[in-house]
Amino acid sequence: MSVLLAARGVRKAFGTTDALRGADLEVRDGEILAVMGPSGSGKSTLLHCLAGIFPPDEGEVWFDGNRVDRLSEAGRTALRRTAFGFVFQFGQLVPELDALDNVALPLLLGGVRRGEAYAQAANWFPRLGLSELEHRRTGELSGGQAQRVALARALAVRPKVIFADEPTGSLDTLTGEQVMDLLVDVAREEGATVIIVTHDARVAAYADREVVVRDGLVSDFRAAAR
Amino acid sequence: MNVSTTLLGLLEPQPSHGYELKHEYDTLFGIGKPLSFGQVYGTLSRLERDGQIVMHDSAPGGGPERRRYVITSDGVTRLEQWLAAPEQPEPHLQAVLYVKVVLALLSDRPASAYLDAQRTAHLDRMRELTAMRKAGPLRRSLLADFGLFHLEADLRWMEVTMARLNDLRAEVVR
Ligand SMILES: Nc1ncnc2c1ncn2[C@@H]1O[C@H](COP(=O)(O)OP(=O)(O)O)[C@@H](O)[C@H]1O
Ligand SMILES: [Mg+2]
Image (cartoon, rainbow over all chains, first blue to last red; front, side, top):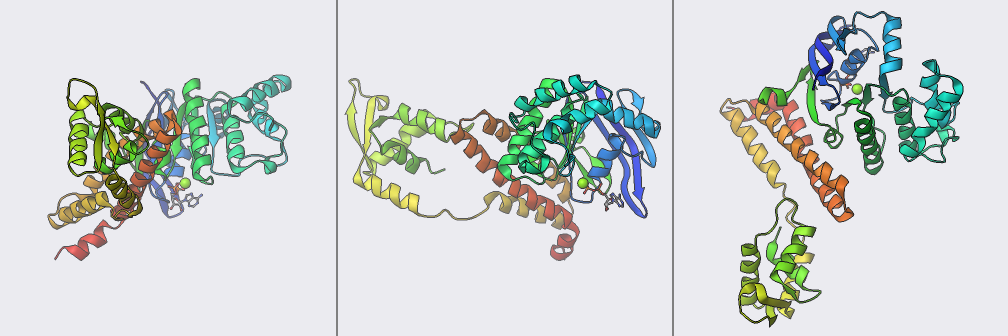
């Protein structure tokens, strides 16, 4: 499998805090990777650098053969809208909109016509066990339902990569399992690459392999053992 | 797993042959570790010797595989005692890991590398159990979950220990 996404010597500081101190990572096309490590070790910062949410202070970020760190802000925004999907721990759905609006939103932002955007968005509801919930306000969804709507929204643009940061962090065990089962199944069906940040080993066990972030550096013990 | 009391429990509802008990055991409990026929027939002959089961009937030709056994009242008593007695709440594996970490620190070997290797092994097993839980049926999913929660507990302990190796070294190395 070819490398789809990579960080090379990535450094990122917030004020005097060195969040990343030369992080290296390669993610292969179609793989599901867990990024583990203690709280505050730099996992989310690494995810944000890989996804072009902010550029690193130093080092390179590569996606599909191109330097993400060299893109302009507008270039990074366009990349995120077309090639990436995001699932976070909470608070990502727009509360004023209903579930279907939320899923259609990234398509509308990407310039898809209204009718087409809503038709595509509606397709995700039965696939994620959300039939009949299309017109619920997001505040009227359970935690697990809201997270599945967030997953549908991440998938709507048919992204090459799904970035998930503690996607089950606010869910109980069973609900978290449902979300992870769906995330992994749908990603495999779609051929999407998935990067899951988690400190939870049960969540990491869904991935094909794991790396560990500690003090702003990435360790890949499987690569070391090969 | 206590094989002899487990076989008693499987035998209690109705008389059974050894191969039926083995099949039932493997289906319900033998995750990746089926009983051998030798284990089954050896265990049954010890249970018979100890009066906890007796032969119910036997097809012509002799041989242990032709015998059907039934539980005795002594067997039921032993089964009930075993079921009611709590297991020693002892985290076996953790004790071994703890010993390894301390010995590594005492001998100035790389304790963190051992823990990293152990985490990789734990996650490999958790991956298998995750697949097993997903495949079902529910009774196997719940067994897989039991394993997953225990391995997760080990990993949490390893993470805490990893974060405190320097303090632990200072405490144990004289
Ligand atoms: N926006 C920010 N401003 C200041 N400090 C930050 C910011 N984001 C992260 N940090 C700091 O950087 C370090 C790594 O954070 P983060 O990547 O969020 O860790 P993790 O996701 O592993 O918990 C922490 O010390 C955190 O406090
Ligand atoms: Mg984080």
